[in-house]
Image (cartoon, rainbow, N blue to C red):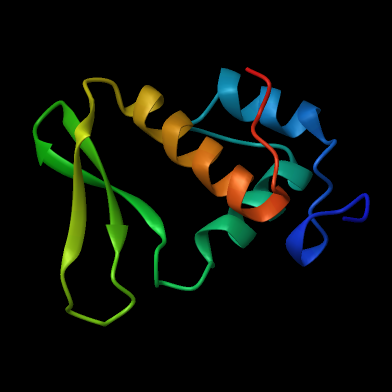
Length: 104
């Protein structure tokens, strides 16, 4: 593997991972915003998403890739904080793009 993951994502930009971990919601630096746009624009098949199960509770899910198709709920991945839920999705998307697990 080269120094960069898929789509030119530098897997060593841990500063971006750290920035997101400390502020998953709100304004981000230009580099982090570009990374988030890339992550959010991934193909739908197998894409990790959050589903608001009820007010104050989010659940991790994966899309089937078929518009209107089933969503695979990951019932063991339940969060009671949106920040924790966003961080969980970020880590999965980061690993998918870079092939590396964040060290945090």
